Length: 156
Image (cartoon, rainbow, N blue to C red; front, side, top):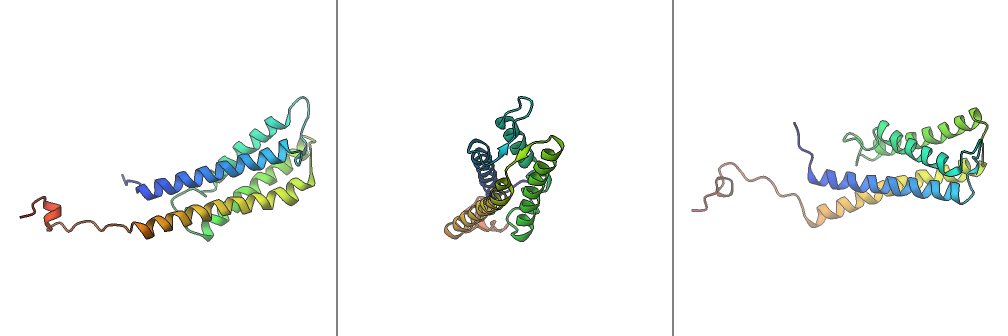
């Protein structure tokens, strides 16, 4: 069993926080601000649709591997996964809108989709920048040599 480095756990926590903040902000503005359009059908309010879409988006970011060890902090691979998960979310919204005969605003796809992608990628970029700054001020300390006094515990 491999241990997860502390820097990776901190970085991943920052990414999760950024993702969650963006998702909540986007759906709050879209649905509560009236940009989303008419998502009321058979008594299902905007809030329910917004929560369902936020949960789906969060799940798709995980399923697409955007927070996996092979993607986090790897630039293009990570960004492609974030964009793919976001496109899947909005594509699912468009499909559900047709099937359920809902009427989303075109602004949802023209303005909110690109803004969402920019905010998510910006959050990832800021998290990576913070990590680089931490490494610059506290460079990793190499493990002591097995024959050194520090490793054996004797300083004589």
